Image (cartoon, rainbow, N blue to C red; front, side, top):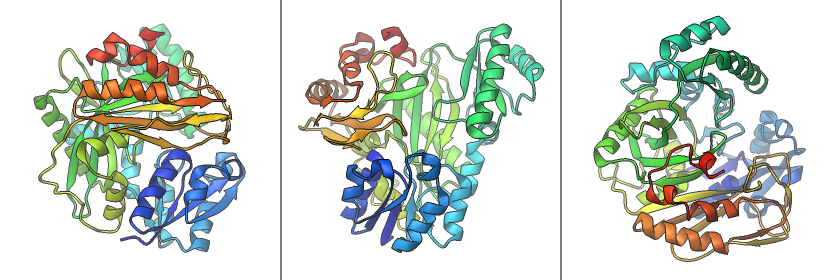
Length: 445
C-alpha cells in the first residue's frame, strides 16, 4: 500500500481523502493556497504546504508548485480529487514521469475520454448507445446548420473539450443555432483553449443517470450501480441518489453492462463515471460523457455498496486487489446526497462571506462531508460547495424522511446558502414521486 499521499485539492474532498488515508495509516499531505490556510483540511493533514496565492492558476493548478511540494515532503503518490488537475492528462503524465504514483486512470484514458467527439466515437465503436450527433467537430456555422438539419431540432451545441455542465447551449431552430454556435465556440476557446463544437440531439424531457465504474489492478472493470442526477441548475447537479427510482432491474442490467464496455474500451483503471441520458418514456439511454476521476457524488455509492471508494482507488494505484468480491456485488438500501452551496436558494448566485454559525445535523444514516466550519471565510475564488449532506437508509421513503429532519437541523449563518432549497425540494410532489427529470428545478422556479 502507498505510504504517503499528497492531496492536490482543497475543501471537503481534500478532507475526505485525508480521512481515509489516515485510517489506512498513510501519511496525508495537504497543499493549500493563502486563502485556505485556516480551513479544516489543512489542520487535519499530517503535513501541509503553502503553494501560492488564492488564484487557482497560481496554486491548485500550479503543477510546478504541487510537484515541488511532493518532493519536499517525500510524498509517494498524488491524489487529485475532482476539478482542478484531476482530468489533466499532461499533469498525470508528469506525475508518473517524476517517479510518483498517480491515483487515477492513466493519461491515455483521460485523453481518450476528455474530448467529447472522440469519446462518442469510441463508445459507438464499443457498442455503447450514443445520441444522434456529429462524429467530427462542426468546423464552421454552415457545417453546424447542416448537421442540425440532419439530426433534427432541437439540438444541443456542446464544447468538445467542456465538462461540468459548462460550454453548452440549446437551439430550437436555425436562428437559435446561429446564436448558440458562436456563443459556445467563444466560451470554449476562452475556458478550455479549444473552440471545437459538436452538435447532438437535445431531449427536452430527460433524466441524467450515471454509472460508477472501477477499473481494478488485475485489468477487470466492474460497475458499482447507478446514480440519479437529474436535480440540476444550469446543467450542474444539486442532488444525487442511488439507486435511481427510474431504473428497472432490466434497464439496470443494460446500463451497467454498457458502462463496463465503456471502461474496457479504454483499458480503464481506477474510479470513473459513465454518464448517460435516459429517455423516461422509451427507456432508451445514451452515452453523455465519461468523468475520468472520482465524482462529487461518490458517497451515495459508498453507502449502497458498503465500500470506501477512496480506499479502493488507493488499492488500485498500489496494485492491490479490492476489499470486496467483484463477482458478488450486491446493493443494499438507498442513499441521497444534497450539495450545500454558498449561493442563494432562488437564483443560485454565489454568496461568499464569513461563517458565523455552522451546526451540522447528526443521527442515524446522516453523514456530512464538509469543507468549512464556524469562523471560516468562504471566498469568491473557488467553487461554491460548502458541504455534502448524505442520508442513507433501508428504503427511499425512509431516506427522504431522514433527509427532511437533517435539512431542518443544518444551521448556517453568514454566507448565503441553498439549504432552504432542499427543504422545498423534499416537499415537492414531483421529486417525492421519483418521476422527475432534469427540468424539475426550473419548474420549481
